[in-house]
Image (cartoon, rainbow, N blue to C red; front, side):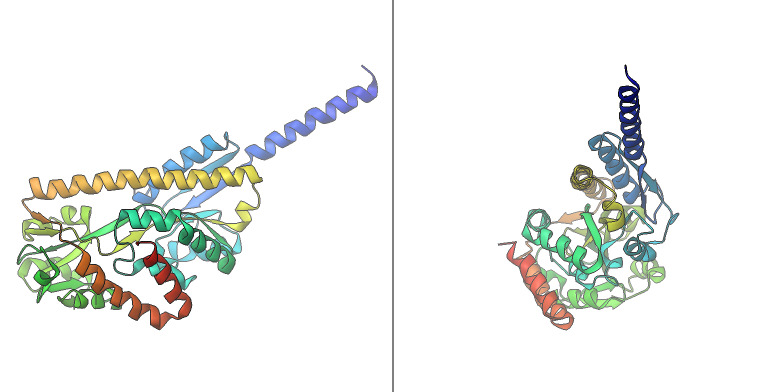
Length: 330
């Protein structure tokens, strides 16, 4: 082989090696504030598995729990600055940076799981992703699982919204939640969480709402005999990524990372739904609670009044997004 051919072959080999090293060197540090075995950590583990599978290992996802790289309050701004690659952030903690995200905390903004799927997977979800990116420079990779609140009380089963009349319901000191229970016909009582278990046990308040597993973990079933599946509020834990990280990827890798995030969100959402129903079954079968699943039509109608009142205070862009989401339910 001539010197020139040997030289060309050497350069080609070096180029291939360099490309391989560069691909292997792409690391995605993904932060979250909760412990490793939390919902965030479990969602992250699925994303890590799929991202590395879909990219053939060219992107190394590393999960950083427990505020290692930023707190949840700092994470979004850090992605805007490009100092953090990705972060799981509860939707309401995104609102200070992008106020339209507050739409997800409105009562019955998603009327059921099929409505939520049509929003997230359809034109409205695409609009939210595009508008967030345009306004903030941050990518929304996955909305994540829906974490619903269930209602409970010590007075009576709730079969219709009329059964809410007069119930003294503990709520956080949150204007939207107070307005929601008022619209449902109850008497909301704002209480700090530290005061809540005692207030429920002594009858100072008649009931409240929490995530399903929390009702079991706090043993509320011991003195709250009525479990009501309203799913009136939903919490979301989306996965975000910075533009600086996404721009380091090839076009193919970007598609693979986005697909991994969506697939991880879908897979984990199924797990969460299954686990929620298992906890509800436990509360009835082992905890002795009486479960009711009221027709939601009246609750949704009342909630939509609250939605419009809140939206009107936030401006036309917020009103338009609320209306887009509600239209997707039809």
